Length: 274
Image 1: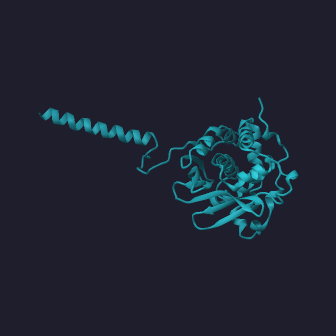
Image 2 (image 1 turned 45 degrees about the vertical axis):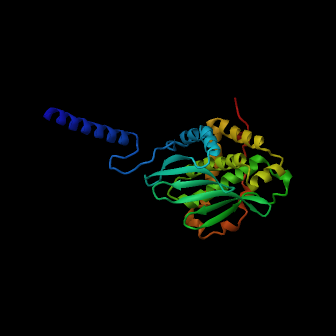
Image 3 (image 1 turned 90 degrees about the vertical axis):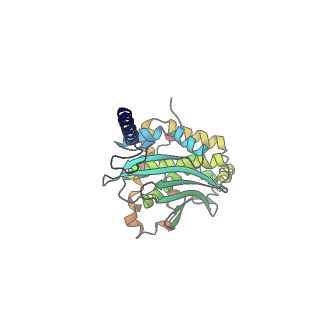
């Protein structure tokens, strides 16, 4: 009887130890006992390496767009060396479509949605501290001949990067912010097409772009070689410098139609290569 009780206690100890080891090794619990996120996308290394990771995320974007409320975790390191985990998801609540980015550790979040600014599409950022900013994507949207899907994408990506820069802060590298914006804006575009309930969808239709055209365009962006994806992200990162949080307070940026003038000289990102 004594040996049976002893063996039973030893077995229980081993079982508890095995479970704790599994939790630690699978990143459910960190060694110090704190809960830690399991990353789906890790942005680290050189610009080329990060662009390579971004390029491979079409299945992730498609999954999130098709499954509102589901999250994928993006991990990156701030300039101070701190790991940041962002939960990215597409939300479709009561007819409202938006992308939600949530800082897992702090609980801070931002909602990104398409809105109307006059007759032009714009991006609205609603931060959970109550701040809200709207960034006009195109100026003079009635000039249909001057608007292409690639120009809307380019300007929208710039707007997404600025809004995320305000939210994330200057301690995060510009290329990383631009990459997160690249993923978030692609999800925003695909999500509203899948949901088919946003102002931007009717805007697409007036421009002659149906859902299939939009989806094929976004697929082509991801299908390009790594150098082309890196080019898109770098160009987006280049516009962030003057508008990082420290300078926003002293600028009249929020009243400027800045994004109507953003261009990318190389347009090959809209066409996939073999």
